[in-house]
Image (cartoon, rainbow, N blue to C red; front, top):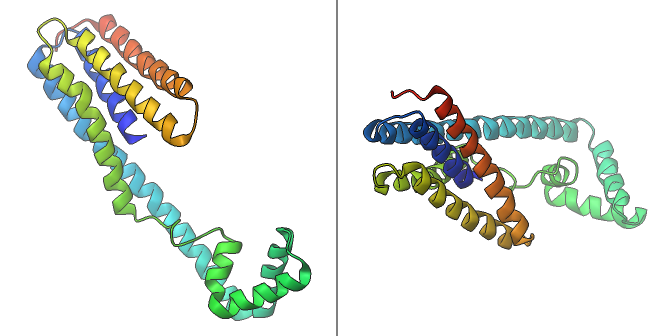
Length: 210
């Protein structure tokens, strides 16, 4: 996701400013600045989102911990009923609930009632870094195309390189996810092409060298 965003966002920005008549050095600086700003924006967004989710999970765990202290019998019954709802017989559900409670009551309720596991808890800083890195790696692809493009061929070369990168990314994602490869490729190509097309038209509309 992050790499795809980086490719499409940076390519669209570059195509748009080239269409507006921006000279090569200014275009490259704009592309680099845009890539940097958007990568940090992605990181900030992920950090805030994951931190908020973590705060919510911690608050839920605190309430569950208090409930276990206030009324352990009710919590045991609630855990057993949850197992019954998943197809376990009442007698076995109660026995399993007892064993789970003896082993780790809070963990049992966190998993069964809240759907929380240690694996589900993400580190906000790690997620933010990964998001920024993926975006930056993707954004470098069209920016590299802009760097090597001969004079007057920037838009074409950026568009071609971007589409090839999206084909590779979309095909790989579909393959790893077990989805139809053709559909995955068509989806990313359509939205990537649309984004570049719209920003190109916006650039032509203003058609002013900056």
